[in-house]
Length: 120
Length: 111
Image (cartoon, rainbow over all chains, first blue to last red; front, side, top):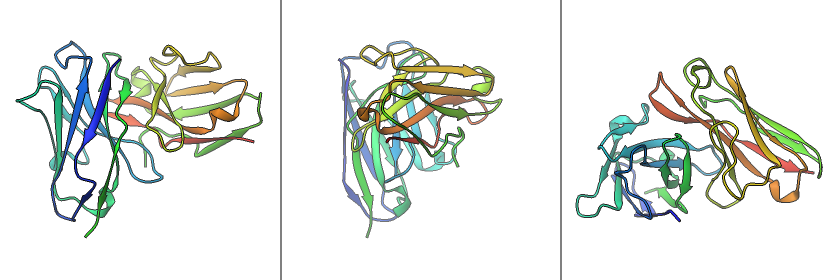
């Protein structure tokens, strides 16, 4: 059974950089068609896809947030993916989910999510 | 403003049938990209409900079904149960944005 778990700060100040880590198990990022992505959800609002990385180091970003996002595979661990988001603002407050993307293009496994609050 | 458009809310009595629409455009659903549906129960992470337009993952009751036509897709739920109260999201890929996109979500209320 695939598992994913998000970790990182629960509170960041405006203008700071957010770094979130996704630790996953029971699959390899190097499997064809597989990717690990990040999706966020502001309180009471809809889901928003942020970024995705595949085993061939193909990286995709939300066009509206591309300048602020970086997704990487942790070089020291084959089962971790890191997302950084710069210049955080209160509107970035929400739950951030790490997800497993299948070759079908769907997100079949989700982490429990981590709530990030941006406030001074 | 979401790329995929869903009604904000739908409701139905126990045992009834409801449908949730998901309207896209020529750069996503209309470009023949597949549609997937997710169910989010209160306070929990979303769960994959329908994939590749009309396929159910193991464990999802056959009361849930999906369809796709043109630039739109639909999720149908028959035999409504109280436990179906949740938010439902459609998802696809948009070639113009080169991005995975979601609908704005639909809250289902079982009366």
